[in-house]
Amino acid sequence: MSKKRGLSLEEKREKILEIFYESQSFFLLKELEKLGPKKGVIAQSVKDVVQSLVDDDLVSKDKIGTSVYFWSLPSCAGNQLRNVYQKLESDLQSSKKRFAELVDQCDALKKGREESDEREEAVEELKDIELKYNELKDEMGQYADNDPAAFEAMKSATEVAHAAANRWTDNIFTLQHWCSKNFPQAKEQLEHLYREAGITDDFDYLETSPVVQLSSTEKLEGGGVTLATFHQHQPAQVTG
Image 1: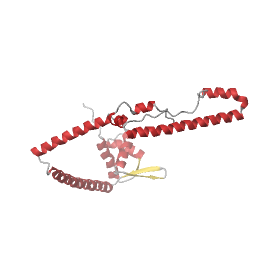
Image 2 (image 1 turned 60 degrees about the vertical axis):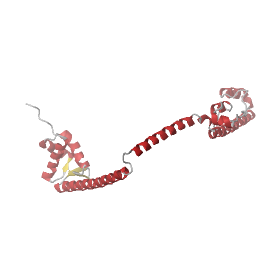
Image 3 (image 1 turned 90 degrees about the vertical axis):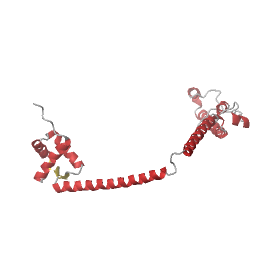
């Protein structure tokens, strides 16, 4: 004999609803777990089935004291189904209206775009223009390193970094002077601390390097001076 097929989730839901409709009463979950097997729904799956019915508003539940009661009446299910039907009907009408609008829009866009020799020539011309545009765009990208605006922005940023570096250098010298004045007995310890922090005898303010000026020819043709070259003639950037 073939093994009896188990109930699907939808069949289990129908069986649990039968319990409510036939009795038109209120139940605790443990009571439903006892009644479920009589309808072919194993006790272990009753809780999940009941919760799915609650989620779909086919079964109501409420907590009274410390107990949670479940119930469902045929009229409640009928109202729920009517609400679902009305929503689906409303969605259907909205979709039909939107579809009609899109059809009209599509027809309107087709006007003046009928296939013809003139249209094919215009499309080919547009493709050529787009190709030329992309070629020019790529060519402009080759001169990005010589962009005067980018050069000036980098120059300004470097000046800010240079000023910040010297400001912090000045702060360090001020702190060294204060430490030497207030802790003269700790001179050796302080010098050791300075060395560990990278403050050596040659530590000093940064000097400004000469800025490479771009000629108009170099700006337009990339005549050997780029932002990379500018980097090499400027101090490292320091935030402060």
